[in-house]
Image 1 (cartoon, helix red, strand yellow):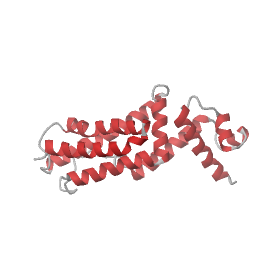
Image 2 (cartoon, rainbow, N blue to C red; image 1 turned 120 degrees about the horizontal axis):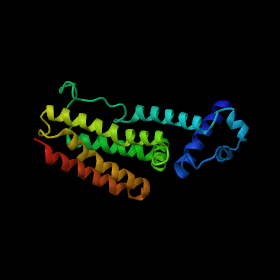
Image 3 (spheres, rainbow, N blue to C red; image 1 turned 45 degrees about the horizontal axis):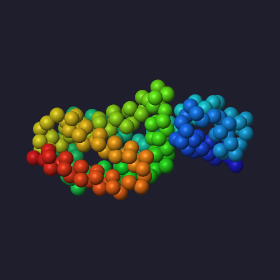
Image 4 (cartoon, one colour; image 1 turned 45 degrees about the vertical axis):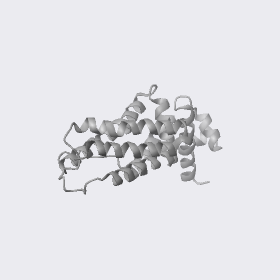
Length: 205
């Protein structure tokens, strides 16, 4: 097995363990055993457990940035309202349901999210990342989107941050429900679609 393959196996095994029992509760020995190598071999790839976590976070964030509509979202207030076509209820449903399916079914993203849930009260760095990924970035994206849709005349004038919260935060709760009870995914997707369409009916001009 090549060095590069072993390193990736270490990362994958670590993320799986971290997502089940947490970063703090996982030992280097457990990671080495999961990969089927000696601890000494693991240390030839990573200096310590923190180095594994740092590499994992880097990889997952890069993947998320490549595929997520929320990652690295810029504030929309200074953008031309005509730059993007107006969002319709149908296109909003398509975009948001696609995003939910992605974050529920991509193994790396799913495991990373579960790790953050476990570690948010034990690790300050991961707690900050949890807030950024699952609250701040999402609310920022939707606040910008609300401002754009108000400028385009699609939605009625109101507080865009509160509108964004009304739209996106219930969806976050439903995603957490799916993490705990994956068999309810179809039920959740149907609720999300109804929620989006009702939101547009409430605010559409």
